[in-house]
Image (cartoon, rainbow, N blue to C red; front, side):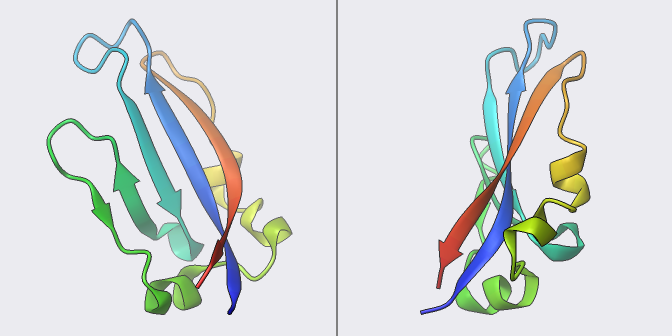
Length: 92
């Protein structure tokens, strides 16, 4: 079994966000900002592409490489959304 590292970003809507206040969305990114998984969206747009092919192609070999990703480095609070990022290890 192989392992890979991905970036998990959690977006939480602030009270100032009148349309999505309180919503929590989770995104998982790989190399090249490839969105592999999305859940928690209000309108049924969730999807999961975390299959072995995509994990092998877009997963990072080392956690330190995943930390250099723009989706990890740029996760910060904004007026309407608070973002937090973490590195997750996935076996496939």
